Image 1: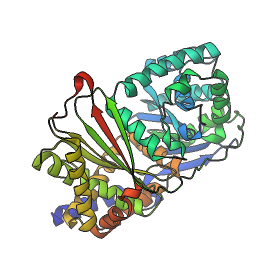
Image 2: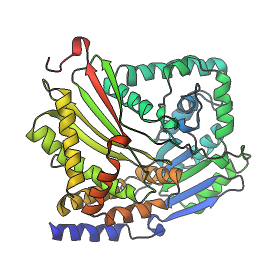
Image 3: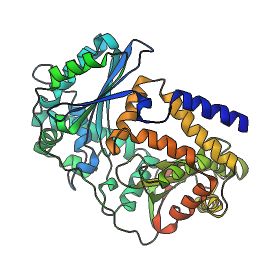
Image 4: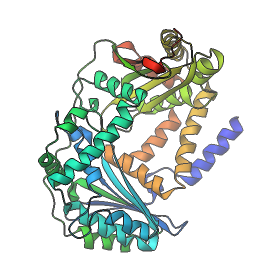
Length: 442
């Protein structure tokens, strides 16, 4: 095992030597504030163009949640120059694909196509940055589509509904407490003028980052971006929102009764984000608990005790502000959720009292690094990684992250478990099956 670990580390260093230059990124900033990041990758004649806007659900206000996600939908409805559905049709005719995503802190749009056609998304994205047609009728029509999406993803999905309720309970002050898709009541009462103002405020060059990865010439791509985006004026100056969550003074609990097949438990603990030194050890802790079938939670709860159908843990650290550590499990048929909760907490207590073995920690670290290496085979994932770190504090954090992971020791893992997996930081959510789907052993 030691020999394999040494070989793995050597391969990793050869592929990704330390230092910001490992990504081979070139960074530019246009006069209007638009940041451009370009990474040439000539393995295949393809390229991805991505534009990330620094706006997500954290930038919304009480009573007006869901604007960022709805605006993502509206971005495909056309401009005066390119009508409805024209954007995606043009990309598809060029042999490419396009899509978008909205998170708590950013909204992104991407195209993946042959590298000799990279000029197409540059032109199209520049046009819809400021020229989107937003009529009240179109906004309300798409609002109805989002409401149906919400019904399917939350109201009709018991575990997702529990996750939503747990976050709403865990956070008192921070806008992390509301869902990216928005509350149904806010969507129902949406004022189209709020969406238009949201667009005009946040969709501007000085609030965006362009990322291009693939078989391109940096100088040519930059020239094309300057030609299409350079003439767009700066938008209003936006002060980055950093909300602060007040201290928690004890465990919080929430119960969701919903038609479901099996009981489910979700524990979330407030933890620092990845920019904090403890973030690396928390990431490795999640791997020790939940890194495959030989990990602690699966081996104990699913394989040995057979009390759970599934069990997992996850550190969610890629956020601007401190977020959460998750631990969850679905009860096996006929098992009581109270017994599953005790078994889950027992596993967390074990790692707080005794450090994991060197082998467990090295395995978790190897999995994290291997996942990163495999992602680099995809130019799309290279760009997504760059964008994700850029949005929370700068793309150069990627190198610090990898270095931090390598330095984690078993003692570090035990220390952060004991420090953060405590009742005063915890919110517990329980899904209680009811109706025809009820199956909890009663």
